[in-house]
Image 1: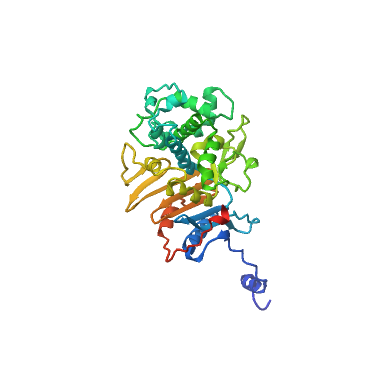
Image 2: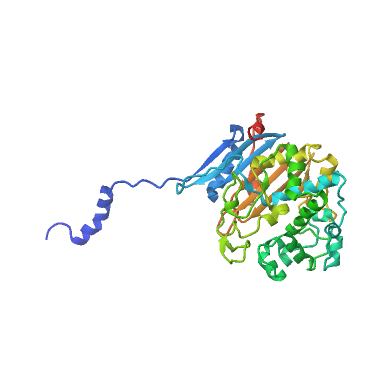
Length: 411
């Protein structure tokens, strides 16, 4: 046998075959697709959101920016890896906003105070006719509820808004449970510390505020918010959310999570996607139940930036006032539904929101600058951080602010 050996031929074959094989098309590079307006002067913010969405593979996101009462940017974003037909949120698509609902509830409380129908020093037990097992709850005032000073610590006794199965079993009532069941369960248990001594974030405290708003106003919570707070600002899209995908509002995005949970909506024990029946949205109303677009939320900040539209200057000052425990080690404090920090000539306020399938952020900052960020998923095991988005936004510089106002396009 002459020429190359069989082993040599086999060793040489791959290179020859590769050279002869037709080139394969490269996999398409994922991109971020957008809807809505982002002027070139604000490209830094727009590019930041594109990168954030791309790196976290977020299927639905929104950004809106307001400057001195004018909406300058309103945009929807979606990650597209070509595995499905992309669904790009419009600037008016609705998202669950989670705990951004708290400053809405606090504003409603202050409106009732402003109208002479409620006192910040009124006791929650008397307003709601509660007979608590822990007599210290008699010290829980409306203001302490607004400032998370009610005496509950979810790290010690868990978050009552997320204990549906526990409460159902403890009270021997079927799922789904309601507000009255949650209140009955919590009222029969001791507080974790004395009211007014320690700030610990409490969804349950805001559930109680929602019931106080209903009791004092004589209206359903949602109705009071829409008529007294949102309508004066021309905001008509915002509404309370529902638990199931089949109940989604018109224009509402879909929510994503890698986690599942046993349904809290019935006794079947069915495992469901966490954002759809893994928790009870109607129960979250006053602490985390609202739907909004980012444009709606920056428009909502005018309730605090334009005294007299919804709240007076005095009401806004009371809502943002430092609590009885003072400021924390970072120089910040919790006002009514807002984190607050005094800077030169301005009080910066902000808040985030988070639940399975949702991460949100709303900020009112110096120089008349406000922005809202909404996402249809949150940080979960294995994903990149979400909490740093505010730091990234603060690093963006703008050489010149435009004066075009997009408000009339969306309201």
